[in-house]
Image (cartoon, one colour):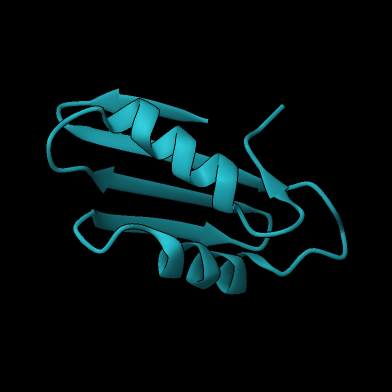
Amino acid sequence: MSSSQEGTTQIVLVRQQAAAAPGAIAAVRLLGVLPPDWACTWDVADDLITLRVRIPGGGGGKAAASVVADRAPAGWSAPR
């Protein structure tokens, strides 16, 4: 789901259900629930979302995994 490199954590989500919202809509929903102090860039395709976040105070990978696992848009999850 996530990997850390040089203070940036990368989060990848894949659409797992055909009825799930397409990438752009799912990305907006996901960005809306992330903590406001996270700096974030992203790449979005219909079936793939890649977020790169900088999380103040460290703990990047674990913090990102926790938030995304709890708040990923319906039908989206980490690659299997």
